[in-house]
Length: 465
Image 1 (cartoon, rainbow, N blue to C red):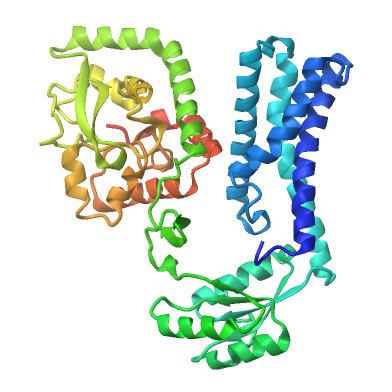
Image 2 (cartoon, rainbow, N blue to C red):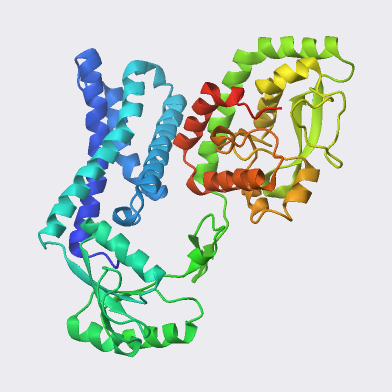
């Protein structure tokens, strides 16, 4: 929420925390009633309800659910909510295991509650947003703002505030030294930069957004000094979006010094825990299911061509560190990656069994062992041979940023048509663009979606060698 919290904003946030906790308790009780026709009739259920009441605001706060929730993007809010719920579930599981009470609860009730609670929390926020939007339209939550800078950045700020009317912030106009009159339908230029402070004091403006280019450092310093003689909340909107390859934009603090991360992995803190648990559980289950098929493939490779069953190739992993990636051998040669010739369609080096394995990506199955080792993830940018990395890092802008996360067995690029050989530079550029989009937009649900799309069509893509 923009600015320091007003009493009404504090009240709304407190109400939201109460609703989150109470919804968890009620939903659990309702599922118990629906399945067993009872409602918190045992000590174990009552203790669990109390734990949900205590853990919910704490865990959701740890995952950032309550930080500027009104002004956050829905995707980021959904991710924070889901991670918060997972943290609550993990705490409850740990307590249940420690006190040996988990067997008391019906699996049907617990699973139904686990699946329905995040949806309920998101629905509560949707209803609250609609209420605040209605109040804003009726002028009950209106606060004023001016934007300094009528360029693209200022227009983006204006567009966001106007689109998200539930914020209750009305943009009175812009201040700019180079423009006058109406600014593309967003409002009028109210004056020059040297008139900002006087206007803010006279009109009692609540918020000032400094949306000037980074090169206007002296102007920004002067404006900040002048606006200190007012009660307005001043925001500096950094022009970091000029960096096309920006992945994060997260703000970290070095003591009291804010630092903006342009390129940062999304897998930090609780995200890293969720990602690792997801990888370990899913990879273990998949290996159990496919182990008979892996044995059959190993026999086929061994009996139809000379050489080892597994092919170990050096590739780049997290932070550009070399890792050994496992594959079933599909070729008559085993190039380590230091001098590597990319496989092409109808490549004579590919064995008859290898053709079949590559077509359906069965040669990638041993990489689930890499996942258990922790050198790879199930979903992530595909790892390239060392020679390919050294070649394309010089040709494709932002190429090495794909190594901010662990490489994956499948990825967003693979399910969007960039699977297989990259004969042309534009195909590699497209693959890197998809990889960076994955890093920017990662959620556990995105991983699940990519896995399902891979199962449905990714393994039989026509781009396979």
